[in-house]
Amino acid sequence: MADENKDRNFIGSGWSFPPRFDIASKTVAMTGEELDINNSLSILFSTVVGERVMDMKYGCNLDALVFESLDTSTITFIKSKIEKAILFYESRIEMKKIEINTQNILEGLILIEIDYIVSATNSRYNFVYPFWQEE
Image 1 (cartoon, helix red, strand yellow):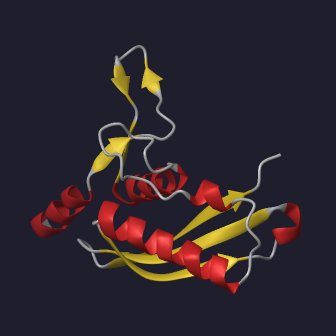
Image 2 (image 1 turned 135 degrees about the vertical axis):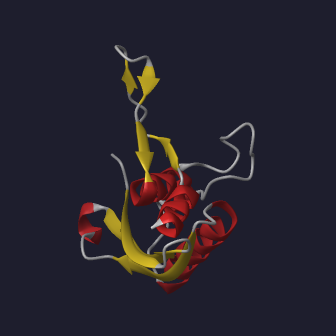
């Protein structure tokens, strides 16, 4: 049981996203374990490279692809950008598969589906990131 708690501590915790504050206790709401990883992935994919002052290389720049035609080369490029971002900025997971779901493409929405394993616990999870063209 002690080893399992050690593994859970490795996963870590972080601020909730979006940040929420509790005035009464003067604290910020925190998330932990897999929810923290999912929040981290969401932040990573929605951050433009150069946007974070303390780490100018952090981010994925998916917004730059909003108006690109969604052909095989663009899908491959999106997958490559995501793989690289996860490799450098989310070391708690091992990515297994990325799928681009274009079922709702006519509404301007694609779903980026990522299967991953949490390295510390060897548990498998799925994360879906909605990527759409805003009007």
